[in-house]
Length: 78
Image (cartoon, rainbow, N blue to C red):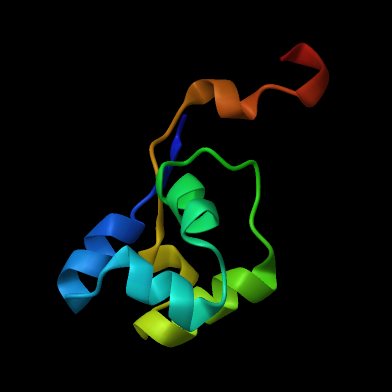
C-alpha cells in the first residue's frame, strides 16, 4: 500500500509510549495499534487533530506516501 503510517517514528522522536498517546488522545490502545499498523481504512479528522495536538506535529508527519502508478487508475478499473 502506498500510504504508510509513520506514527512509530514520531513516538520515538518524542520519547512517548503508544499507551501514553492513546490515553492523552482518548482512544483505546487497540485502536491506536490498528492505526499504527496501517490496518484501518480511515481515521476521523478529529482523532487525527488530537494526535497532532498531543504530538505537536502536522498530519503529514504521521503519514507517508510511496508513488504507485496504480493509484492513477479510475476506481471502476480497480
